Structure formats: C-alpha cells, structure tokens
Image (cartoon, rainbow, N blue to C red; front, side, top):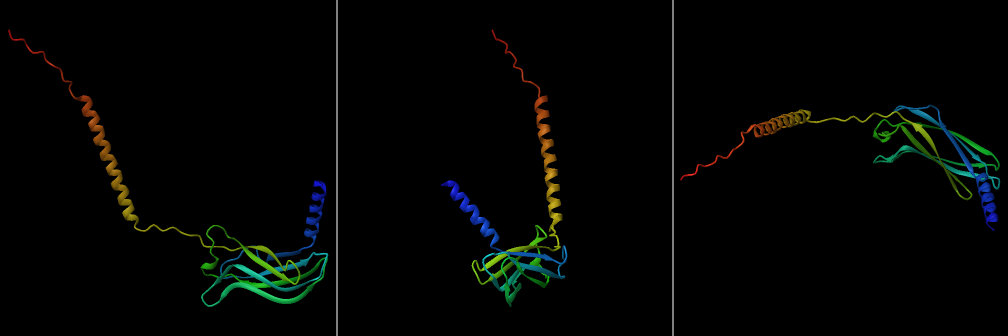
Length: 191
C-alpha cells in the first residue's frame, strides 16, 4: 500500500515537472551604475506536454518599483497574444530598462537585487513566476558624527576624574598603612 502511494506520488511529481513553463532571463551586462540603461533578455519555453498555451501578458517588476506620487514606476507589462506550442515552443523578448539615479535603487546590504518576471497564460495554473538577478552599484552609507568636540571633552573629563579618584584611593591606602599603632599605657597604681 505504501509502495503504491510512493510510486503514485513520484509519477505525479515527474508529470508535473514536465508540465511547466520555464522562464529564462539575463541582463546584457554583469552590473550597472545608477542612471544607466540596460537590456533584459527573456525566453519563455512551454515544456508542457498536454497543451498549447497562449501568452496573455508578461509583467516585469524591477527592484525600484514604487509609486512616485504621480504614477507607478519600475514595472513593464507586455501584452501579446502569442501561441506557445506544446513540447518546447518558445518566445523571446528583449526589454530595455533604465536604472533610476534616485534613492529607490539604494540597497545598504547588498548590490544584488531581483527582477520579478510573471507570465500569464490561458490555462491552469494561469501564471508562472521567476526571478532574474541584477547587480547595481550602490553608494555606501557614511556615518557622520555631530558635535565630536563635545564627545572628546567628555572623554577627557572622564579620564581626568579616573586619574584623580585613583590618586585619592592610593593615598588613602598608603596613609592607613603608615598610621602609628595605638598602644595602651598601663596606669600606675596609686597606693
């Protein structure tokens, strides 16, 4: 019973792995500067064995996708009615983009960002998603210390106080160790 269930699941996963749409993507350059233009190359391949697919649209969301107060910027939607034949039919696109030179592209932790690619088709599961890496040179974040003179003054005062306290403690220990010992005199007896 368990063997039959395992065999069924492995065959189902094999069929599902073959019945998919693969999205391949790459950029024309290995890295970009802010303000630079680039090209995203895209290949969509129908590896499904069961049906021809019609691509309704391709949506591309760049990492700088944002609402700028007037409109949404940083995405592209390509509307087309392209038929992808089953068993390897493919469609290619080359999409130009501009890297913004404002703060939307800044990433303090890494220069690697992801472009999200979504392909809408006419049959279930209706949408296939993939990601493409893009490398953008970002400006490092610099630290600035304000009122550094006041910080230096506070450290100087702290050092002077530590030295004065150390001298006082050392003098107290020294003087307590050298204090003459008190001896009691015997009183003379009066007869």
